[in-house]
Length: 276
Length: 298
Image (cartoon, rainbow over all chains, first blue to last red):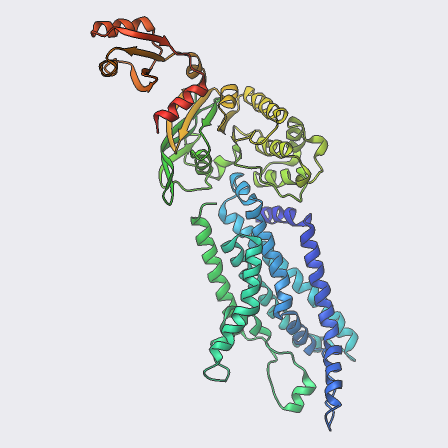
């Protein structure tokens, strides 16, 4: 198992495209996180000019809510799609360069090949989650007046929650990569599905009722997003008297895991049958 | 000699196209076995099947006398179609991946790069290589770990004469050490120069198999003509060593299953009441034989 991962890392470590994309991802993610509060408050300021009673400023970076708030921003589609494209490139490259054939000729089994890609996905998800958690932790320590351990750990469940999100989302990319095999086509179809097709289906399913239903949030991509569905903008929510979400539900995690398990199953079935 | 590879009645079809048709082959240890056929004759499909990339629709095959497995693949060094490597990795890094998959140490990498003349360029990226160098890197990767069998698919395809000579020299050097080599090619000249044995394929069917030296040297073909060509054809077919017959220029080219003396044929026909107007012995090059086989099979 470690041997397979070592081979995969050899393929990745010297691949410039990988480092450029992962670098861009973290730059955009960091900017997004750091700009979130400023942008929202700027927007509130503009809005307040027309209001008799001004809305209070939002604070995103306090423990314990920072875990939920930041994981909410990190898991919006436009950010998640970055590492997904990286995974698609790593998988479809093997077909473009025909290196999958050479790997199999050299004695790697198809199962081992698939497992090696799954290992990369798990590793990448772990690394992204850990780096993100460290950034959030530091941000929280800077912004919270009297941080104590229990306060810090209170909503830490959003960290494993985010891990499930990125893991399952990358597994969808794994599925697309092995089904379509062509880099450009796969990226186009994956992006199209994630950003357009599923949102359209989401609203079509809602139309007859004009109210939230049970199916739309359980569509594959939406089921991933549902794990961290809302940020916790405490002050505003208290004023409005609404309570949206303050933990990660097991059911929300299970749904995308089931989707990805089915997708992995389909990929294994197809790959073991199809000629390479 | 021990059997290295034995294909038994392999068939494979892609939709309407019959790529390989009931193909049986036996490759013995130490042979340099050529699989010869025009483009699209099923050579690469045959290699893909024996390497487990494709599943045959029917038939089976044995490597080293046993059912194929991961273990048997590790005793084989193979390159199919074009050289397949990561373009952004250096020659050495690409070979390290191959070595890791085959559970080999990296110690053998400089050797194979030396043999293929790529040692100086070992740290250059694959996509900076010329086509000839890419082909040689493919041969280098197949040579890693001193495999018992080397499988090469059109290794000189697209190379300039110098590149062709280099690859052939490498193959002959490896063969001289006793490594079994299976070589797919559409070039007769190549098979004639490198191989000890040959199987000729066309449209997935095996037309011929045997020693190259036999095919080249022995006149098992005689051109004959007589007043009554029809009777001649009929009579010659009753000869004990008759194999096949084709017409050309009002004469008949007759193939026999073994070397045959012209006087023997003359006597045989005369005994059967036929007087020949023409009799000539045909020394065939492999090329001619190949074309004849293809024509015969149209």
